[in-house]
Length: 257
Image (cartoon, rainbow, N blue to C red; front, side, top):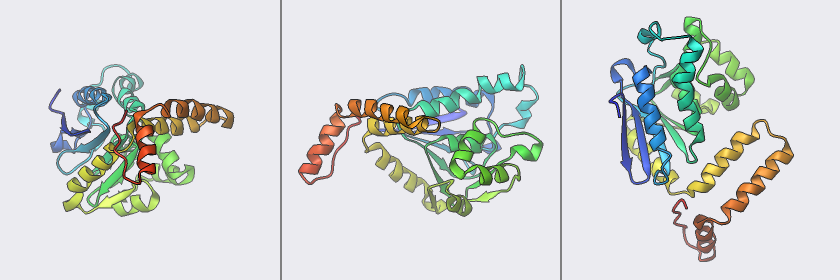
């Protein structure tokens, strides 16, 4: 795997780190390729939680504009070759994906953080739409994710203003679920990721699928999918363990099976 992305394992937690700190981890073609490899590896059943973060002072500054002018083909073709596969991979992972936003997230870096299931911010994090500042529109799924997180009116106003959002404001808006002092951030992320990894992974993955489906599903279609996935879930070892633990008045030990 290329040096543009680093991976590490701590038990069932896989951490994926954007590793271009000299440019605040801006996306280039090599980073996209390495990220795709890492996300593909994250699908392995032994991985029960994924953390995505950035090296150095930034999470991800979005597209590396120095590379932008040399992109072969049209912009829409380039997006389909680079950003889109990785966004789809994050959404297809049947396990929690946590964006550990350690510093600035801007442009497509913001879009990518919002593609993750959970966002936790360092007090040093900031969130910047970016695109409108250079006369572009949000891409990499930004409009799809952000309007669902914030609501149409607030999302539209923010994404067309280029206003820099602090970590505290992001928490107030519901863009992130927690803000952690910068000096405690790494330890808190490790703690949170371990908690997620200890949960019943198959149930989490199926819940993720249900929430995705619910965005544009009719009630009857949602009820049918819930019933189908519940039928699969009652046959899992985690369900048996959960019931036994409840009856025995102890904490369950889930295995993700």
